[in-house]
Amino acid sequence: MDRLLYVAMTGAKQLMQAQTLVSHNLANVSTNGFRADLARFEARPIQGPGYPSRINTVASGLGFDHSPGALQATDSPLDVAVEGNGYIAVQAPDGTEAMTRGGTLNVNALGLLETQRGELVLGDNGPLAIPPYTQISVGLDGTISITAQGQGPETLAQVGRIKLVNPEPEQLEKRPDGLVRLIGGGEVEADENVRLVAGFIESSNVRMADSLVDMIQISREFDVAVRMMSVADDNAERAATIARMS
Image (cartoon, rainbow, N blue to C red; front, side):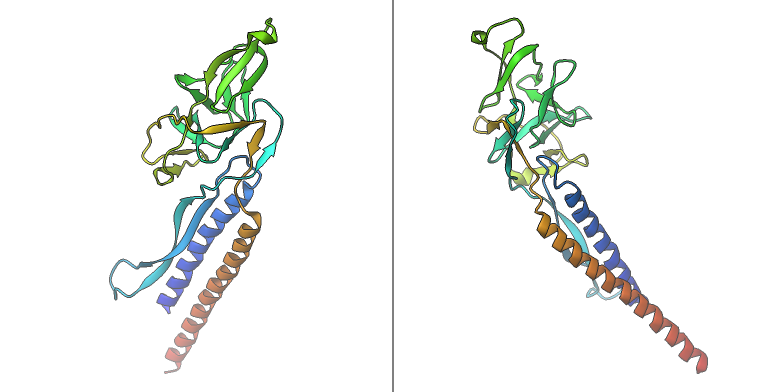
């Protein structure tokens, strides 16, 4: 009885963890540049005394989905999307280098280029500083050009270039805040082949229909695990009744 109850309890716990991951993906279906987290159930032996054939099913992470999301036109000069593979290098809140696909950019009150969430966008020599301007544009290679205040359009000047990187997918992991980093930390060399598309943003790559199906399936499996716990309790009660009668 105890073993049945333990297996059912463990299964319910793992299903709750998987449901949390699916719910997190659905909550970010409208987050620009979001990458869906992936997970699967796999068999793992139970550690401790007993036969080595005792196996539990455990929800384990598979990293995140690297496939690009759809591009949405905004016509804003500071909205950029990475074309194909690659990332925009940013400075994470803890000061380390991280990466993002969220290309909704703006210039803050200090004249620094930042993402919509407030991470500073990195250039070749640290965070990018943008002088006061009347016009601004971002080139395919991330080069930022402006027309300075008080100058005519013929005085277009380059003020920096966004650091674009393209590390191997197996080298990457997601941070708790949703940014991407190298496994173990560190910085990535700029990749000249990564290209940006100005006037567009990349939507989340979460597939809503698939996530809803996963949520329904996990919910049903959780109900089965709860019923197993109820059956184990009923069996234990009946066994105790028989023992008392004998």
